[in-house]
Image 1 (spheres, rainbow, N blue to C red):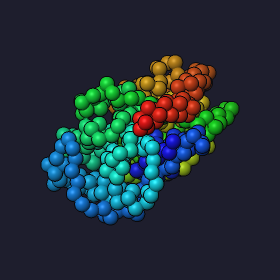
Image 2: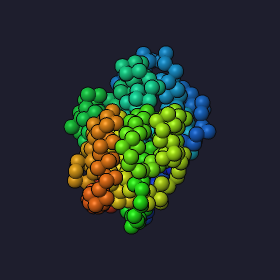
Image 3: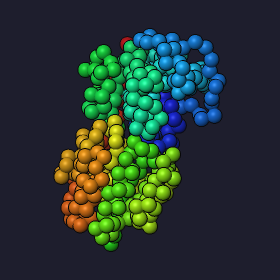
Image 4: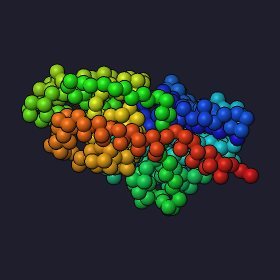
Length: 375
């Protein structure tokens, strides 16, 4: 079977897609399986042209928005790039971005297209202050879910929570399949270590949706209580300067290290003690599974797919979103009790190995590819 994994961003970009898709190829081996990866380079802009017509709504109702215009142009660019670069046929195409799924169905109308929706783009844009809730852009983006349901052959997502999120925007939510991301255990090598001062770490884009302002306020409370810690922020994004200024104003700049973007954070994540990310929205939260496989204690907010990974008090700690005081108390508990911290970390690692292994994901995907393949 000839398979195409169709991405939007190149696979080295951070995020849930990059945590799994590039590692699938070695599990889909010839002669029975052949797999290619495809994405659009950043340099390809304003190349596509022509009329765009969706089957389930008229996008021109939202055309006064520059963001919607850019989205539609990017869709045309992806169609143009696909026609230019792909000169072979495939039995099944698996898309990992709404633009990609629609473009692939345009170019290859007779090939089954499976669409995985990895995150709520519109929700993140709202939280990051880019668009207004119920504005033109929001209504356009949620309309795409029904369009994807209509045009693709199978709709997938990465958590039961996110399937519930999609339910109001599609006609058959019961048909959405949930397949969480899988992770290659060989990439994660826990390291036995004893840090005299607790090392806190998070890995994410530096944007408001990740709740890092809540984390900094919680750490300021830790410092006021005299608890020693170091906070490592791995990632980059538009909020970096604001967060650096906030760390200074809260008096925790000396305890906080801003790394910027790092390609393979899993290589040194095992040397930390606690992974913490108080997101405001998270379809799944791949980085929690990655941190668990590094044998770190987990602290996350009770939103989206995070509670599907963390059972509070069993393999990590959950806190309410937007609550620095509760987050500070959870971190204090783990800082003061290394034995409890290790117990949670070990339980998180075992759960991640059993529920989020790459072998499990590969098995489920192979079964689905065989189901949708013509003939």
